Image 1 (tube, rainbow, N blue to C red):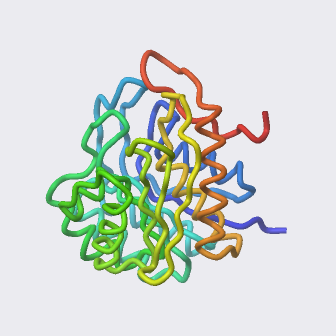
Image 2: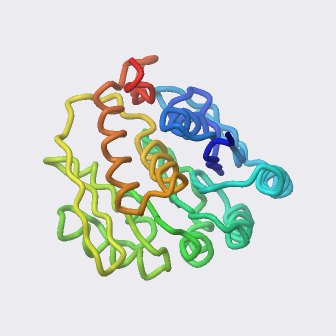
Length: 261
């Protein structure tokens, strides 16, 4: 029997904690077949990003068509799209694909390294977000996209409204950078759902954003509603953070295989 298929369009993390590597680990852990379109190669470890090299637009388009036209997809997740031409190419490909799309508008790495050219922000707003079933920005990315500085839950609501104006059907604002419980806000502008989990005392959280977005995509591919997929993804990533482990001299990754331990 053919497994449920999920495609990630994102950058490679040579340290294995985030990016394409985190996406594929998440997809496997959640019982789906993960496939990839690599958009950039990074030299990256627990200390930060030492270098990044974007792939040509032709390579992105060829990878995407190769997978979608032959194998097919039930959901697509996007991550690091470093430049405006790359964002616009991926948005065009997604618009012609009949599958839910989770857009993780990756702008800044866990270590504060910029992963998105300033010139690409407008393309994210006008081309990529309008094709998203769910957009999953963290608070730094909210500021990049909307100019809003979020410091509390009321600010998360304002941020969600601002991001929804760019056109995604749903937005999942990740509030992990606030103090107190780890709270995320899922809304389509009509329904509003607050997803809460206790804040865990573990600094090894590399890959949380990629993991959450990939888990949402896996849920949508399996036929869950957006709310069901987000709730399941929140539970999965909370467990992965709890089991996060030291690796190298900096911030270690979450444990994608925590349910199998």
